[in-house]
Image (tube, rainbow, N blue to C red; front, side, top):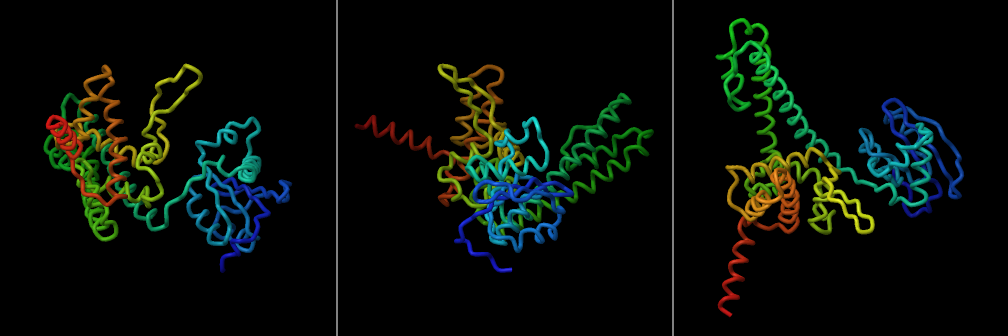
Length: 363
């Protein structure tokens, strides 16, 4: 079906509370009067039956499992889809008389009054979503393997023995030789599953390398930062999708929840923890990179030197704060490299300061 005329004046606002079995909706006319409410089946067919032939409308929904494909479908039928950020909609989830129908009506009234109050988000494209699913599936396999390794170690430790320290990749082979004889029946299948899972993770790593080279060559410049591997580089590109969506690279850190919360009133300005807004998977990857950069194997760089200077002040929690600060600065750096298509120079700032100092002395 062809798109409806996008220049037509919008007279209708629809709020829709998404669910697994049913979506509840509320329709408001141009004057804000409720004209319809009800529910539709939470299927593509049910959605098409209601919206494909519906006059152009503003449709407000909340971000969730179904919001990505639903927003794409609504846009395809000529509607304007507003995907609200649930973290910003406290007036809905904290209501004293909360129900699915009332939630739908509240979404519609907020969208009609001022769409910016929804703090609308933009979902990534279908291809980026499917490629990002590869990374998330790999992450699920890594978590499953970690859980099985911890189970095996705990089981053996309860008998007074210990399994050797080794990497997760080598665990199945090393542990098989050290498992007590009376635990072979119990842990044999577990070790076999760990071995098979490791093989699947390696296969996905090869797929990620190939995907990066074929479809996302821009990840190569991001991987020039020591500590940023193929998974983090590809996750960064797929999560943000378009570098131009941020006018300033610093905005990326706030978008990923790596900046402190703020509670300021009068002379009081509290120092709070980071917001943890945005994509928690990418934030976790950046934190992991920050640990590597500050660790014993991190190469010399301006970022590492700056992070190490933070570790020397602030008491016992100084390193934790330094890791978060490095992750925040790393997010800004990666976006700048990507947006400006620049080659990474790990010690550019240090050389620039030295050059300025020498020039100052010569003058």
